[in-house]
Image (cartoon, rainbow, N blue to C red; front, side, top):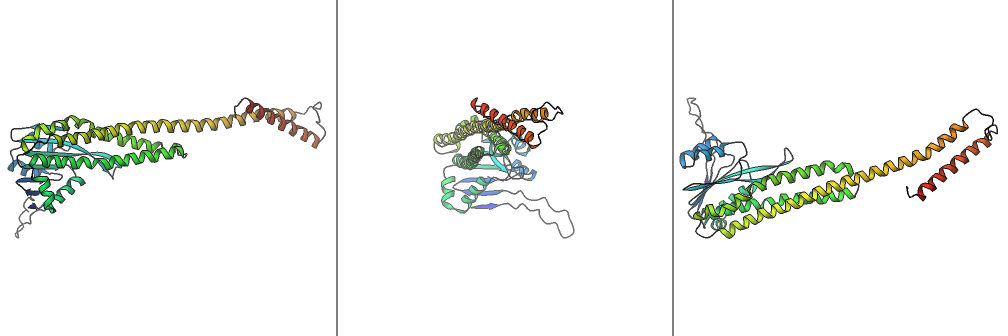
Length: 330
C-alpha cells in the first residue's frame, strides 16, 4: 500500500487567520514489512518532519539540508546507516553534465531516499513499485538492504545511456575530422572533453564508498548481499574504464584535429610560397623592361617587344615550376 503526503499549504480559516504551514511532501510505500520513503528536493518542512519522526543524527540532517555538494560517504550508526552518492545528470539549461546528489537513510525495514533534484531512474522505480505487486515483492520482500541494492543498481543502469551518448559524439567527431571539419569541431571536442571530465569527477570519488556498501548494510538483509553489491562495484568500474577509454579517444581526436589543421595550413603556406617565388622573377623582368633605356632588346619595336617580354616571363615561370617539381617541392 502507498500514499503521498500533500505538499500544498493548508487553507486559512474563514476569519482570515494565517494559513497553516504546509504538510511535508513525502512519498510513502509499504510492502512486505519494508517502508520506502521518497522525499524529492527536501525543504525545511521535510527535514523537520524527519527530525521529529526519526532519531537521525543532526549532522546527517544538516548534510541533507546543505545546498553544497557533499562528498560520497557512508556514516554508520547503531540503528541506521547514512549514505551519500552522486550520479550524472545532463542539465539542459546549461548544456552541461552535472552531479545529482542522492542521500539515503537505511535502517531495519526502512529506506529513505532524498534526491536533491528530480532523478528519472529513481522516480520510475518508485512508480513501478507503487503500481505493480510483482515489482514490490521483488524489490521489498528481501529487506531494506536488498531494496538499497535495487535502488543503487537502477541508478547505475541509468548512467550507461549517458555514456553511450558520449561515445556517439566521439564517433561523429572522428568522421567530421576526416571529412574536413577542421576548425569547426574544435569547440565540439572541447565540450566532449568537459563532459568526460565532469563524469570522472562524479564517479571517481565514490569508488571506495561503493566497496563498503555491503559491509555496512548486511545486517539489514535476511541474506548475503555481497554478490549483489559486487555487481554494483563492477558496474562502477566498468563506467570508469569506459571513461578512461573515452578520455584517451578525445585526446587522440584533439591531436589528430590539430594535425589536420596544421597540415592544411602548411598546404596553404606552400601554395602561397610557390606563387611568391614565381612572381618575384616576373616582377624583376617587368621592372627591368620598364626602364627608359634605348639599349634594351626590342625596346622600340612595339608589339614585338611586348611579345618578347611575355615569352621571357612564361619561359621563366615554366622553368621555375619544372625546377620546383624536380626538387619535389610541389
